[in-house]
Length: 264
Image (cartoon, rainbow, N blue to C red; front, side):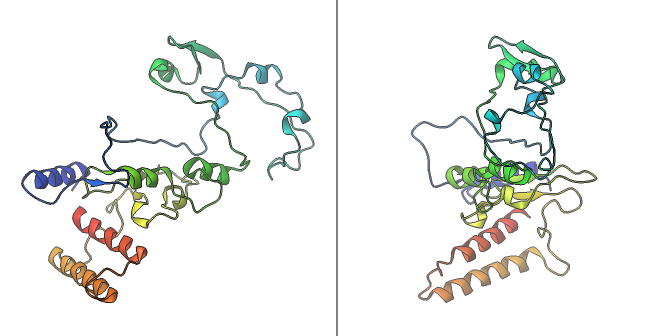
């Protein structure tokens, strides 16, 4: 069953008196209803440099081949890739830029279609990080910290805003398939110190897009439902007086089991 079919099934269930489809985040409904329904975030690990695409630096191009001034480096340490170099020459873009749209956004010749959308996009050129290597830099872009352990953007959105359909994961991850793959680690869509139910669900190509979603041989939907009910009973028994144990790890794990059951 595809995502569209699952979403339709959940919607019809809600319209006919089934369980509520919406799961609000901690922010709850706002006084002014939001217009944005979803966020599609594309991250190109190892993609072209911004100075080749939409961050025109004419002065850098003029100084191409000259030595990096001490006034720019300011004693900052070098990466292991450049630490043994005797020279640090500046390198400007090899491509031409033109202004496009009413706003005059300067965009490279490499992206003519993007240039045609110059007035429909927002280009932010002021972001920076102190991380000088790929791994910490990528982690910083996804979590706001170059050190592992912080929630990713998708996890924060799920935590704060919730989802319109509680029968589908609010945060899914698609990784491009290729020979060498991409240097993308699970921490980049993890939940950090938030409950693990807010982490991204990775979709894979092949027979099972989501791991462990298909019942193993000999286990049907009724058996799995019984297993989940018994698991919940054990959890409540451990808390005493029919109360939940209060263990956030157990709560998050059971919530994931329940979501997987509803997705079947």
